[in-house]
Length: 269
Image (cartoon, rainbow, N blue to C red; front, side):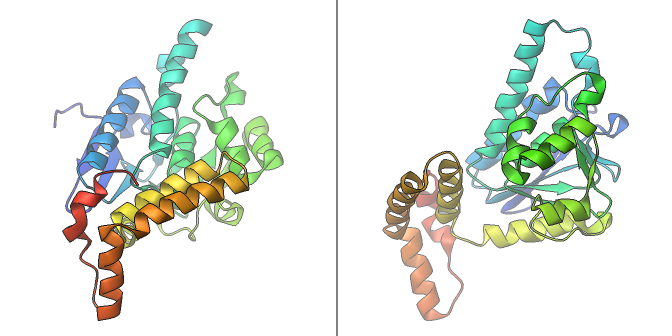
């Protein structure tokens, strides 16, 4: 790893931790961070990692947003290119075939919050705050915030957050459903996220991928179409080696050895 690395990747086992490492600018997202984050997550997913924890260096910020130095002075056409590229990267986080769990250790503002919204779910430190303050700078969210936040919490709450710039504290985020678990002390947030990731990693890898695929597909189609897609996926999963091992383990009252069916997890369900 070079001295000017912007990401730190740690993979001690089935769960990898990826840390945005620009504490001097509150882990701001520039083109290089997004590019390297995209590559790191894709490489880990292809390498049989079962879950990924994404966080930021320090206790101040997960990420305070896009690097304004890169946006200042851009023409409309060039800004479109930069923001579209970032939006594409963040959409790929959302479509990751393995769960990406955000460990939000502090501020997640602007693009930082948009990354959190694209993750499978998030664990928040008690001191964490979420927000989309771009309008106060004459800007607007451009990495998917206007779409994902409204889908998560409803139009009025999303509009209020974006039009006033008011931050959402961790407890309020839990109440709104932006995190499925109560906030934890900042010194525990990464460990709490890793513990959840390890629970996920113990499940059937192909089943996990199928659940993620069904959730993503179902969010954009009518219920009947979502149910049909679920049936097709469930049939493939149920008829696979992984399910056979899981059922056999349940009957034998032992832990399933899903590593033994590793080959079947290399393909998306």
